[in-house]
Length: 241
Image (cartoon, rainbow, N blue to C red; front, side, top):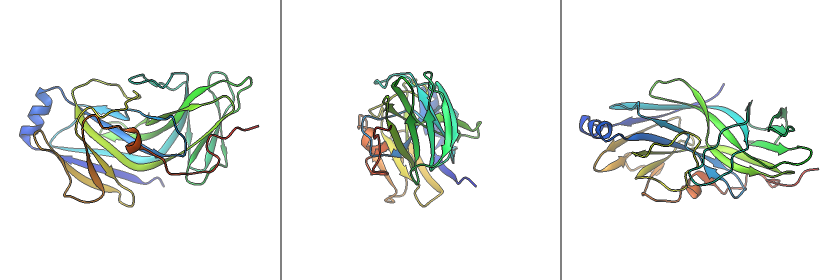
C-alpha cells in the first residue's frame, strides 16, 4: 500500500487574520533526486484554504507526464499526456503528441521516461504526485520539469522533501519557479510520516529546532533545495537506440 505523509501547520488567530486580510496564498513544492541537469521545480499546490490548523497530506502515488511547454521562468507546464506509474517502471513515449505506454522495468527506486518518437521530437517531462491540502480533493499535480530530448531517457526519484511558503503572488500550480517569494520552510520527512510546524506573521516558520527542517530566505535559489544532485542511476539521460 502507498505510504501516507502529513505536515500539520499551526498558527494563531492574529496570524490567520493577517494572512487572510493580506491575500496570502500557501504554496508547496516537492523534491526529486536525479543526476540530470536543466530541471526546474514547479508549484505543486497553491491554496487559500488554510486555517489555525492546516493539514497537508500526500501519498506515494505518481504519474509520469509529457508536455510541449518550454521550461522558462514563470512559464506554465501543462501535461499533454499523463500516466499512472510506479517506481521501477518506465514510460515509453512513442507519439508526436507525447503519448506512450508504461512498461515494467526501470531504475530501482526511480521513474524513467524514454523518448522513442520517430522522427525524434523533444518534449518537457516530469513526475506528478497526489496531494491534498486542508481536507480538499486528492489531486495529482506536477512537481518538476526536465527536458526530454529526441532520443533521450530521463530518470528521477521522488524524495520526501517539501518546501512551504506564504506569498501574495497569485501563481498557478505547474508554474516554473526558481526563487523563493518569501521566507519558507524546507521539511524532510525521510523516515517520518508526520511533521508539525508553526507559522507566525512576524517571526516566520518554526519547528522546534530539529535537524529535519531549515528556514529558506526570500530570493533563495530553489533548484539545489528541491532537485537533489544525488546520482540515482548511471544511465540518466543516455541516448537510446
